Structures are given as C-alpha cells and as structure tokens.
Image 1 (cartoon, rainbow, N blue to C red):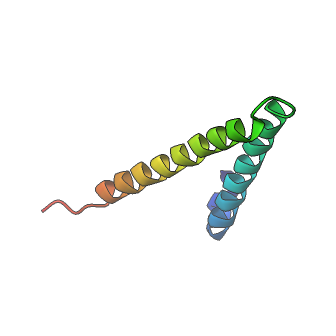
Image 2: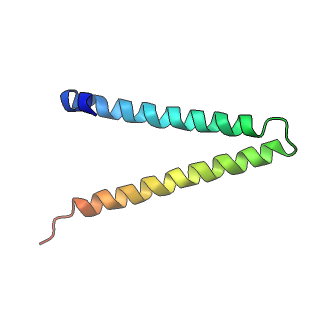
Amino acid sequence: MFSLFFYPKAGVPLGITSLLSSLFLSTYAIIQKYAGTEHARAKILKEVGVMVLTLVIVLFLGGIASMLANYQWT
C-alpha cells in the first residue's frame, strides 16, 4: 500500500496481477482437492463456476457502489 502512494500508476497492474494469481491458486487448489475422485470434472466445474459467479457479483456490486459514491447530489 505504501508503494502505491509513491507509484500510483502501478496500482492497476498490481491489482490485475493479484486478481489473476488468486484465481490461479484457487483453481489449482480446487483441482488438487478433487484429483482422483469420482465425477471429478463435474465437481471442479461446479466449484469454479461458483467462484467465477461470485467474482462477477462482487465486481458488479463494487461498480454500483462506486457509481453511487461519485454521484453528484443536487
């Protein structure tokens, strides 16, 4: 956080990097969890689908919150 104060343009690349790395690590953990089980593909797709749906909902609600925060009340 302190480095973003000095380098504000680094915020977007660091945010994208942290988002993609967390998605990769959570997907890897899900794959390892269901490796070798019965109906593994269906279970993995369900878990990843829930994760992606949750991410989309959070991004949507964050966008709405940022729009409301920047709304000019007259």
